[in-house]
Image 1 (cartoon, rainbow, N blue to C red):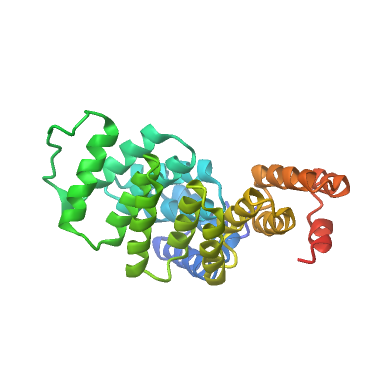
Image 2: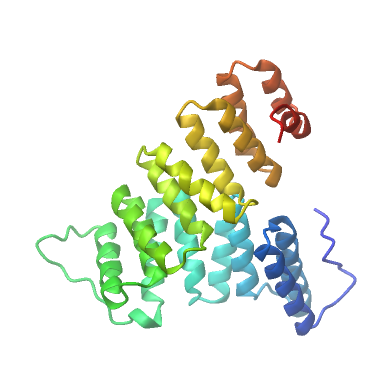
Length: 296
């Protein structure tokens, strides 16, 4: 894929690489995720040309964040893993990687990654798992003990609360997960990603109606948040509101047209509407015609 921010014929110095990264951060801050992806990718490609490796942990991390926002967790996992390879103490990458593993339903890797967030954090060195009458020796029990100890050390820490919420999602304790995310949101009320996590957790607990309000709040802050549009569509579909679901799917696809799974979800919803003419448009991936039909 052509990248307007990268040229194999031009070698950049460290200051220019930092400028590329800063430009990516600026684009991400205003919701231009596609351009941010290109800038972070260009930064990594130029870094490889400079020293023969992809050693920029921050660019890898932010590239993963962009893919996660676009509901592309497999791509995000590769990026977060690369960020950790560059810096084994990149706490943000560990937390994001654990979340992506949860989204991909890989609970073992999610738990291992969340445990690493604790064990690699200088703040929580010395925490130990102690067996008692309630311990069952499972990986879940070990990680939960560590995270609860970390919460005792830092009860209002947003990252600890977020990690605990992700962990409760793994254990299917959705009510506890929502409580943790909501407390984390108090510390960071403008965090659209946390609002999406609350919505997704409510939806996982069969509370799709309640979830919609949180997705809408996230999208009011971040209209280009493809994952939230997709989740909003899924909640509408769960409630048999197929018109609303289709419109939200189309918005998500407009932000990330390469996401094959989104097109599949849209075709299912259009089929439920018994609109085979629209299913045909979706089969041709005629986004413009579909958007026009739904007046988007």
